Image 1: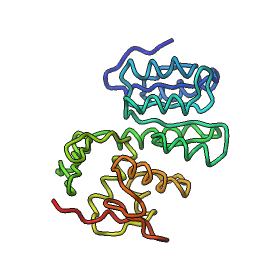
Image 2: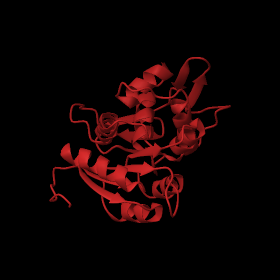
Image 3: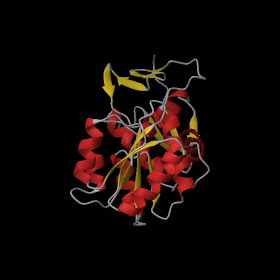
Image 4: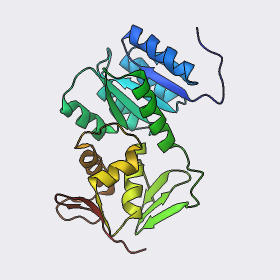
Length: 237
């Protein structure tokens, strides 16, 4: 039975075809104060994600109808809602593809409910406005990022960024002219103690370069510092 709607409860969409797992996750998260809506088919989940407001989506990789990667690909054409992907497969290639398509986090199905909750809280925290910061705009040349609305423009045109991409680009832009190691960037965007696999930052930077129209071989924006990390090049204001 559904719990009564509470305007203060974050509304989540769980797209997972394992009905038993859905019930367990829903019971746990609703006990922690979330409102959980479930769909067990990829296409049905996508349609609901596009039709209704959710603060985050928990998305299985293997789904009937269309798989989780296709759901994510279509979703990212219209929405930047935070997405945590679940998979029963351990291949790093699946995680890389998911991140390239715009997933904010990735969990194997061996996850504990406490770990899922920690990851969920992290992506929700990153997606909300930070009331502690008085900074509202970061400008680097033609790039402008509004931290209150979490929006970005490049040469006056809006950039569509995921929560993870926004935080990463913001960290780089704030440090323009200084090299940031991968470990520093992980601390900036992860906000958790769980292990992040080695290529997650590289995959995210690759996605940012595509959206910025940057060339890794002759970068205008983000330069790779081999063996260390990345440098957001100094821009004229």
